[in-house]
Image 1 (cartoon, rainbow, N blue to C red):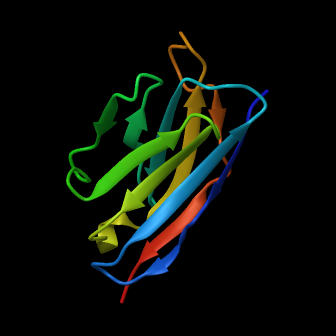
Image 2: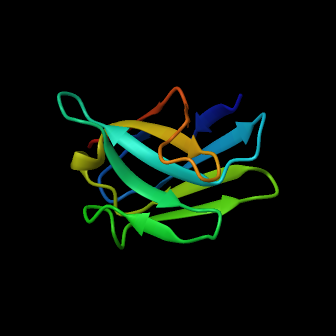
Length: 116
C-alpha cells in the first residue's frame, strides 16, 4: 500500500503563489501527478511527472505551474505562480506504480482558494 499526504494549500490573492507538497510512503511510486476538482466541475489533471522526469501540464497552467519531485524522498511538489481565481479547487496528489496504466493511489486533497 501507498499513503499520499498533501500539504501547502490555503488562501492566496490573485497573482500570488503557493507550493503544494505530496509525500508518498509505503512503496516507491513511478508516476506522480496533481489533479484538481473545482466545485461543480469534473476532476482534471493539472500536471504529471514520470520516473524519467518527463512532465506534462494542462494548457490552463502552462507557464505558471511547475511540477517537480525528489525521488530520494518519494515526494512531489507543485509550484503555483500567478494564481487566478479559476485555479480555486481541491488539489489531489495521485501516484502510479511502474507499468500501471492508471493512478493507483490518491491523497486526501488540499484546498486552494484564490480570492481577494
